[in-house]
Length: 120
Ligand code: FAD
Image (cartoon, rainbow, N blue to C red; front, side, top):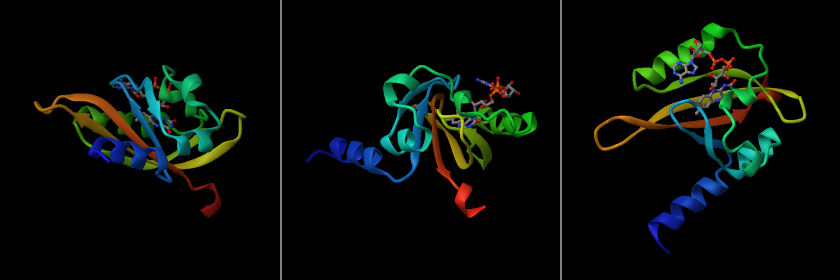
């Protein structure tokens, strides 16, 4: 078994919603847990902006804080009010982090989130 197939297996089976976007937050990849959490399939959400998950309730300042961190090359952690495909609202515990190339340039963003509605 190669390291690459192990990495793929890990991401595909991780019990967290994982997404990879371009630098404008357009979705390139989501894992099966993400699909289960949000109700969107990979093919239908690919190419959509990550804001598709916004319930439009989280204050704009929170998103500004998120983007300020990302633009500085830093990770951001926080709570966002998200919307599933079926319209249902859920509270998401989110970590967003820049992915960089050999020169330290941001090439993508990685998102990891969990539905924490039940615990709040
Ligand atoms: P936006 O148009 O996104 O604007 C909100 C603020 O962010 C503004 O101040 C704007 O200037 C700034 N901004 C937006 N895009 C950029 C950019 N490319 N560069 C610099 N500044 C920018 N949002 C959620 O609601 N739920 C999530 O689960 C979630 N997960 C994310 C995961 C990843 C990996 C990334 C990169 C982003 C995620 N976001 C998530 C944030 C999402 O991309 C949107 O910024 C957010 O949903 C607000 O959308 P909006 O259309 O209301 O506002």
